[in-house]
Length: 58
Ligand SMILES: [Zn+2]
Image 1: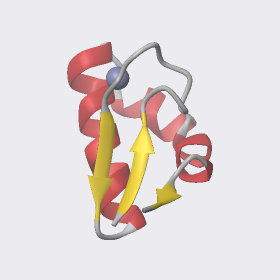
Image 2: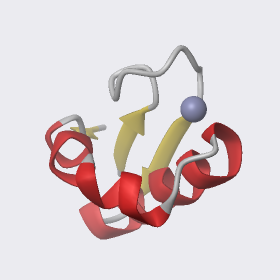
Image 3: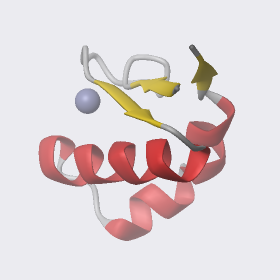
């Protein structure tokens, strides 16, 4: 299981994206960012590398 904490991505938020693969986690985090933080697809693409670097194995 891989996780990505929204806080690690720089948001003051307790959401943790989860998934079996990096791709799944990033998809979850992207949906969350768009839904809860008013981000656009473009915003999420721009921070994609940062998000990827913040993924943890658990
Ligand atoms: Zn969040």
